[in-house]
Length: 635
Image 1 (cartoon, rainbow, N blue to C red):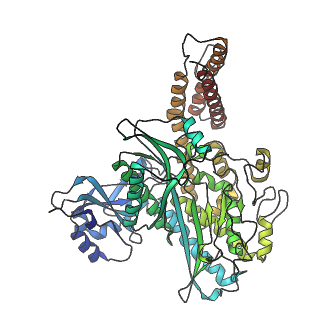
Image 2 (image 1 turned 45 degrees about the vertical axis):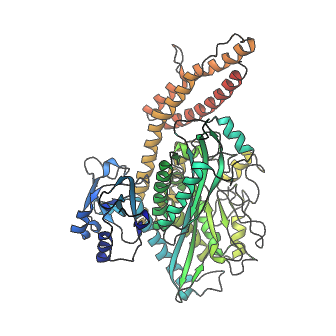
Image 3 (image 1 turned 120 degrees about the horizontal axis):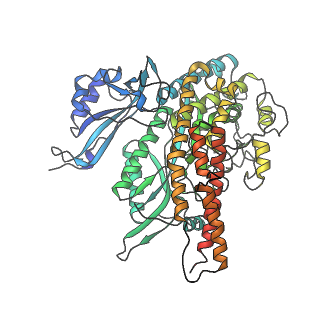
């Protein structure tokens, strides 16, 4: 008789089994027929092979010595690193993290009656005798920061933390977590943008009950995350979506909803990023099993809520006694919001954020989400709350302090700009390196906690020892409603509108890049490989997806011929047609905007292409509004 899915092995915990234990465990699970080394390129893509399990049994060590699997590095995103004439990349399994078993529920093993499994072992990618992948970057960055921070604490102590003796600190622990938002829908069915926008404005969706297949899939996803050791904390509705529509038989005909799932913090950033990747796989598969499509795009529908992946981070010290102390928490949680090191950490992140931003928001889709009015950040600014005894949370800033006055271990920062397709490995790398630079300043500058708080609370034009004179970095106000766009730009800098504008924050700040590449943990050539890859993607997506999609939209905005047309209709459609021709129609004396943009991209004139992309976006928005105004008057 076939066994049940309760007997499946979902993951192998890190450090609990040696070679013999792992092989003995796998012998008990013959349904796990394949093994895969999972390397992560600079875009965050994961490799996936199907190697027969017999090869793993025959030569176990080779999977952890770079001898079992090689890949074509020129076919993944290692731009200018692994080239066509030097493409070999060796894959090294990582025994320090959990290994997940990925089951194919559509391929049942006849011998056991169980779904066929693939053991996914996270791996590093080696090219020319050095590791070049996203996982190795994160590992190096954490190792570097740990070593340097321990040395600083030993030499200078912990300013503002009299309750912690620096001589007792023996280790540094990095805490991190991500929150996964996503949209689900029935395939090949649509809902109008207006329906979605109205539902969002009426606040009809957030934390509402889920129903039908969405409820079933959400519950199953949370349960399955638990089986993989992620300890899911909750799944719930997000702000986007509409009520499901039923057909005449009572079946759900149209589903379009936004959801979020959260799981437990990790004390190993590599495990955090590995978990997030596995969680996406689980969510997509569970909802597909229930007949629903999932998208992790940051802004799948322009004009309604996008999907973020808020990323939390903290730093703890381990003492000789084994006790953990949160380095971001002050001695008295009711008198101070944050420790000196916590203030330094957020100062470091904000100071370097313009150079970091291309690694967080790497695509046009990501930048489309970061617009006023959708609870997504647009300014480089933080918040601590107005009263340490009453923790609050400002949802309009880039990165804010999260705290519980009764639980010092919970103090952390939440970066709100990442999205589900942000490369969590490289994002956490730069978060911790930049935070360390600010912590180093806090440790060595000789300033008190109050003086550090005053520096991060400075006004525009007020000089500072660490931060930029011409910027403000903290506000407790509503960034969207309490400041005009001009005021935001003056205080916090101008937000990039395109990928090209975004990478200027990297190109124009070489001193910040030098700091981010300190210790060669995230080597500068790997940073530049990342930047080159996102520019290549920007150009290809713009030329081959966005412009053609907009062209299709323009072609579909045709005149609606009815007997009830009048001069108002004719005038309105004439305005529509003028815009259609400006966008998409070449003539003897004028090239269309689409043509000029395409030519600028082909010529490598990226300054011009970026400006034309912004104009295209504005004109398309104007066109959609004019056509909607025209169409609503036609009976």
